Length: 163
Image (cartoon, rainbow, N blue to C red; front, side, top):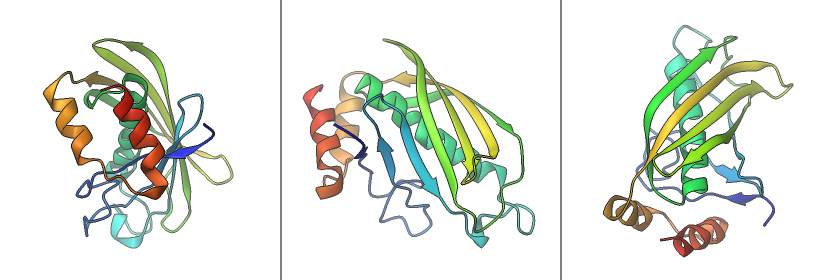
C-alpha cells in the first residue's frame, strides 16, 4: 500500500477544498495506519501577533487523530474527548508536521495520540483523543460525502470495502 492520500469532504473546515475559510489540509496514511499531514500556518491563523492560535493547532491535531480512528475502525468517528498539551509557540509561516497513531481500538472507542512539530522535529504540541465509531447510517452517510478523486481513490476504495 505505501503511503496514500486520505479523502476529504467538500466543506470540512480542515480538509475541505471547497471551504473558502478552511485549512485545506491533505492527510496521508501509511501501511502501519499512521496519519500524517503538513501544515504551514498563515497570518490569519494567529492568536497573538506572529504566534499561531492554540485552537488552530488543536484542530489540526484533532483532524489527524480522527482520521487515524476512522482508518482503523473503517467507520465515521466523532471526538468523545480531546486533550492537547502545548509545548512551544508555533510561528506563522513555518511548516508544521503532524502525526497521529491509534494506541488502542475497541468496538466502541478508539484511543489515538498525536504530535505536532516543526520541520526540525521540535515539538509544538501533543494530543490524546478518544473517538467514538458510529455504526450504521451515520457511517454510510459520512462515506457518501467523501470526495473520490484520483489522489484519494485508493483510500476511498479501501474504506468502502468495509462498509
